[in-house]
Length: 241
Ligand code: 13P
Image (spheres, rainbow, N blue to C red):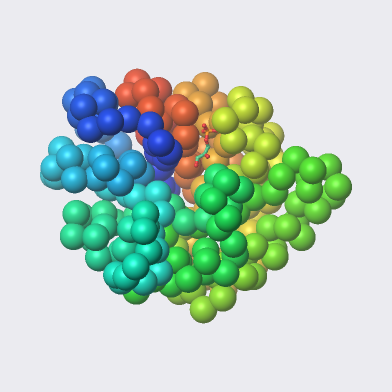
């Protein structure tokens, strides 16, 4: 059975003090989360150590937002997998559209990062999705299939989460229609060799649309940006029906 994975992506938000305040309010709200539901917080690198301490023994797991493919080396500004696993990180977002768009991430580097993450026992959350222009040109499927083809070459599909994040729905409040997200996620699944991979939807997920999103049969969870910064709204998302 596919696991439900609810992940927060804090992006470049929250100092350590703010992270601790969030967790003090958020963690007590996780008491009734069903067993088949993973809760993950993907926080900035500087928050990992302090968040790891507070998450210890809790219902939530720790995630990072990127990882380099080498174990160490002269790569200024990058973070290696052993640095993450030492802190108890279990998940890592790879290939987020903001990395691809603003930091020159390519399908080739995404592929290297995925394999390195898996080699070190991290569960990667691979992000794929089309731009508004590609959608309007009828290129959504071709774009996503091309990303999957290159990103997943040689990647172990038994240790993987995929997030479908249409770029035009990220941070815009313009959520992808639930049925359309369900359709695209079904298409993504049709390209995989392992039908058990959990596939999330991401893009303007909020407390007021989570129930409709999770009612879709192909959608196995969500990757949440803005609404994961507030303990009440993220708790509502995690505790969806
Ligand atoms: P928002 O939920 O803020 O639209 O961000 C989505 C996202 O990029 C999660 O990775």
